[in-house]
Length: 350
Image 1 (tube, rainbow, N blue to C red):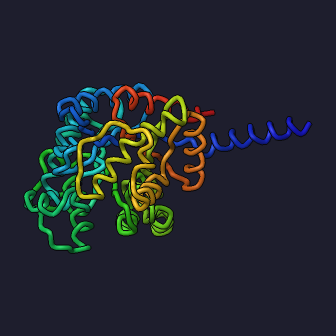
Image 2 (image 1 turned 60 degrees about the horizontal axis):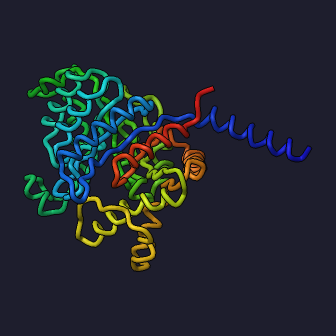
Image 3 (image 1 turned 45 degrees about the horizontal axis):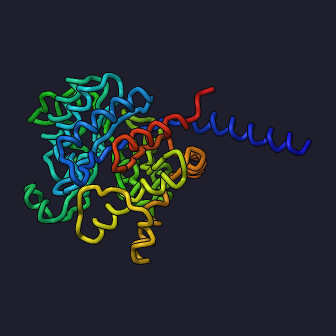
């Protein structure tokens, strides 16, 4: 009788989880360039992953702006978004994100107005304030390196105005004016949460690489959110690492490529994405091991059962409205398999 009661409790809890936490899954693709490969192959892999993601019912597929990074091919983000959107039919495609300080808001309005005109109803525009590069690369981008905390929200408002149907500027974004391109604020600190809340925009937190302030940022965003024409209540999307495989051992092995990438980046020696290495964590100094423990505190690594438990706990703990899943896996077929496992683990609607 006791076993029956325990079984009933578990089933009831799972049903409650399904009802309350049935949230969309999306993909963040850094368009990795693997060791021994090149950007052309990275772009082929990106399109193949997006096409699979569409069949597996992922909601959106985002690409991130980075410059001067030997292992990331998505520098020309809007161009790559067009490539992905042109090779898919229904999945939303967007930027996660465009680093707005690198660009004039008018240029971004024109680029994403063009994308929305080509692929109506499918384009997202996530905006961040980090340079996505080092200082030398930022200077090469003709970026003003002066730090003005008010400039980013001012640029966001200017960009939003370019999409407005009302004539608010002497200069108009063509295409762009009058088009509905959902704007998101990206962040890894409390600043982005404040901007998103004040402007009534959805908020995407980079918990997949900077989880320290995640819970505080979520609470701040939700408590200070002001409804807007785009959004009537807070909406939080959280970055989340997943390395799913048939066994825990395989998942841990696959994750070592991403671990190497973080150590190389923090050491000042970024490289192309490296092949996985057995026993990698045991080969690095303790301070790097501690750093990876922090970075991977928002991650699910291992077999389907292990990944499902980790993801369920994360969703319940954060109350996330959506997960943006990233899987920096060296082998393309293993990467596809990880995303397929993750899609299969998502609870089916009642």
